[in-house]
Length: 435
Image 1 (cartoon, rainbow, N blue to C red):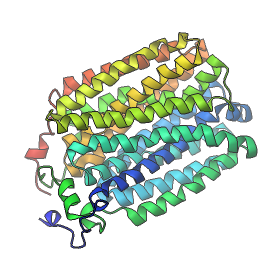
Image 2: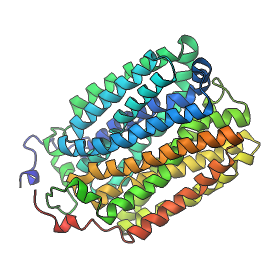
Image 3: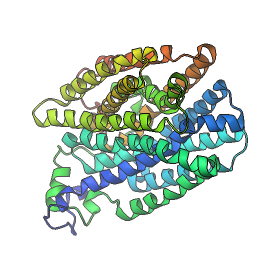
Image 4: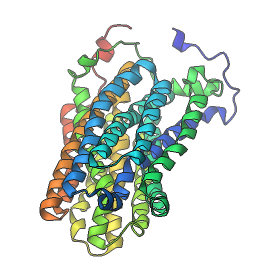
């Protein structure tokens, strides 16, 4: 009964008070941008790091593999941890951990030490999406969640844009070690803002009565205590986890190998691949927001959640398919358009996929389900890291890699529809025991 009460210090009915939930999305957007700056720096600095530390392609693949392994482990732990302590402190703890791990890259010497730092970074960064999606579930009704997720997920692309613009300049001026330390220092401002601003909406003085009514406009769920192991036995968990396993590795491939592809195929280097990457990730930003907006708009027009999410995802899966041709495209501008379309479609697909845990599970289980799906995606990332490293070492060609990328999203959507044809809430959301 307690969580049905209005906050005693609710904000007056001003326009700003009715939109404060989008301020929270702005914080999530910024954290996700920082998250992607920290993880993408290795891809942007790959030529400099290889020259200094003497990596082979296989060793680079191994370093990415260990990051993904830590990410897989971290997702399982972070998801359950965030369900236990909530988004505010869960985000603060994991953000602090990954920021310290990121800065530690600037202090290491040798491939093994670098891999250890990447492993620690992966453990910490795994907290980003469970925390963010938990916060979205706290602050948004179902009809708005895909749009909110699309907006904060667009921070990934902003991070991917900022990295090739900022990091090469710092690295060329002062070296790659100071680049890791300097970017970590700037993250502290976000942590302070998060702790000062974030509260649950019913505890926040800036939330008006009208906005709280919007946030709580979904049917009231029973307060359930869901066993973590129980989640592995329901179909809806796998309806989320298997598509994550199939599609997350494609995004990881873009993130860690795209600068290398542009360098090898079109002769770009640390000074020149910035503008193409910026164009690609700007397109990704647009895709993320449009993907979330489209399904949210369809739901507001009366479509079922099942039809709105899956129709949007089908369009995205088809839009990725031209990526299979990019290895054979001679003009850089055309290649950028094809790759940008694929990354935009990925982000639009993901904006809808990431919304499924809050569509299908009670609030107490959202972080845990996101963690399970994130682990599945990270395991896929581990496999593709090994695969791409060996393929490039053997053939020096991305043709096979892009062929896999072009088919992954149709396979993922097919798996989702096969496992959960109607996207109905997991059975224990109705049959479970009261907490």
